[in-house]
Image 1: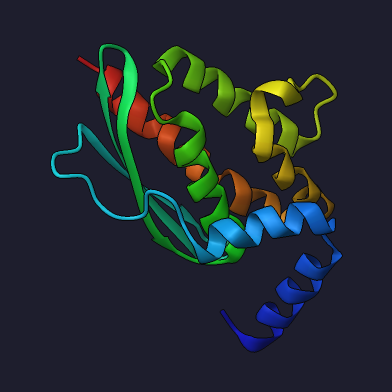
Image 2: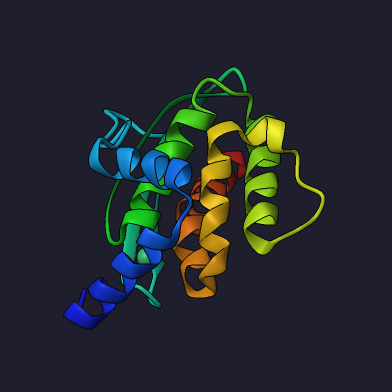
Length: 156
Ligand code: ZN
């Protein structure tokens, strides 16, 4: 990240609602499920060239549920914290429910009026990022990457 971009990002983050910012920064500093799985059923890499974010999602599915998930990556605080929050949100959930959650999350980030905030829980913290349209792609990167990983598994 170039210094002017880092400054702009720090300014944006300072503008986020305090509660949301605390949740986002906690996940950025203490990422959940960061690492690798022993034998992932799918491993998908996602890139956000606008910002330089990279996220790799590894996942296994057993009996139609997300059995294990891990991510690796580098990039801005929004991209990495969103990946961390996502792993917590989808672990042990049925794949059908996870697909629904991906839809709810991306709808929220697009600013849709019809979002099930109860289903999103803490993920609601990311909605503050909508104020900065360029960063919406940072927030959704991990989610699109997980969607592609699940498609890999679903393919015969
Ligand atoms: Zn980013």
